[in-house]
Length: 226
Image 1 (tube, rainbow, N blue to C red):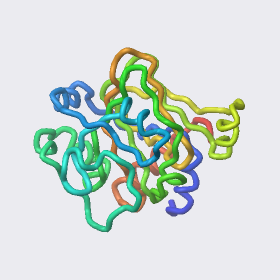
Image 2 (cartoon, one colour):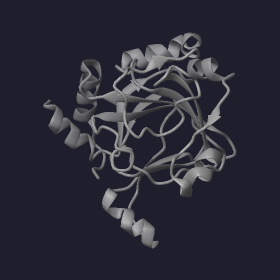
Image 3 (spheres, rainbow, N blue to C red):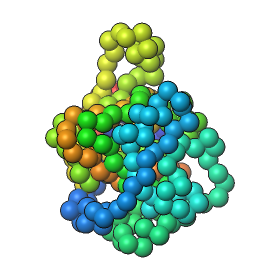
């Protein structure tokens, strides 16, 4: 599949199940003793929201530090991300990254706090992320009712006006690998009293391994399009 065509299709799929499943118990065993740092945002209006609800620890980061990569990037650096000291303690998680072509992508264990949510945001439209770099979520612990949500970018005006708008919602399963649409605005909602824990990484459609996985998943996709 030509990359431009693939990218156009991917931007219309709110949640793409890649058809790959890992053992969430083995994943949790490797991260159960992690320390976490609060995620930082440069947007003053959401700074408190993010610090309260979103925290993480890096396996692969821009500078190789565990907690130095807990913010959105203004510009993606030319240098290749480096494994952190946590990576050597997480062979199963690192194997997962290798399997999907994400060994050299920023990869973090991210938590959403009980009763937590984020702001509606687009990695591409708001943070200038390369549209060829896709957000991947592999849930490790998913509390009951935890929801991943996507809206069409055109509906941001409705959100700001307090008007109704459509969302594309999905409850991800533990251990499964998903592309969470990062072109259109998206959000997460945790109504429970427990943390959601997930491996968050990226897949680049120019990566040979990632591209093959994405092509197969697109062929099998039967869900709605944004």
